[in-house]
Length: 318
Image (cartoon, rainbow, N blue to C red):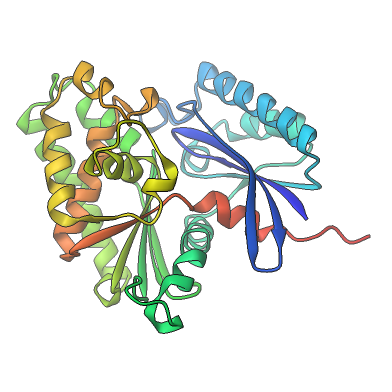
């Protein structure tokens, strides 16, 4: 069955068109556009008109691809920004007009489960417990660092414990770093760290993170840090997927990013233009997670909630 999954987050809107056959998910088309839907939501509580229009423009292009490839079912999932917005109905009406289906504004718990399934199906095949030498060991802590929130999920085949907290690269940048200098001041960075550590206190109280044997990192902040750590001359998803980045590399890349000017970050070969102003906060979130829970490395996954959405789509009867 050919399906289409659309993930609309705080920073980006993404599309996966894939063929689902048994236990295999095969990409047909995978796209990402940075639309910054969550622009200003933390401050105003509303989705901005220009942010909505950027998002709808990207979605119209996605609808064209879905039609061209003949996907038989589409699921649209929206996450942190639309959960927080007073005018989310305006967003929902626009999505329904474009795709013919309503967006599902999922809870943090469901977002966590979708991210976990998307990220770990391939990892389970690599585990030594299934006969693959040297693979990552479950249980996994899957961390999905988004624009508005970060999900923490512990499990083996499914999410067993999860929490979504309101720390994300866009939210923390807008809250602490937008007017903090270039590069940001030490005081501003301390404010970010304080927010992250307070969120990690809540995570540690609710989720058995220290039972996990493997940290799995998802989303653009993590994959960008990985691309820099690997020294790639251009973004290469195949090289980044399932790469293992040591704690020392995470600390080093984070220090370097936070010491750069906007222009220096923009010149990094793997940097997407839409991440230049938020990557510092995203890297810092990852860095504090690695430090707090003493993981020796992070396994990076290019498969995430988008793949989980695709797996969740069921055949249409008749």
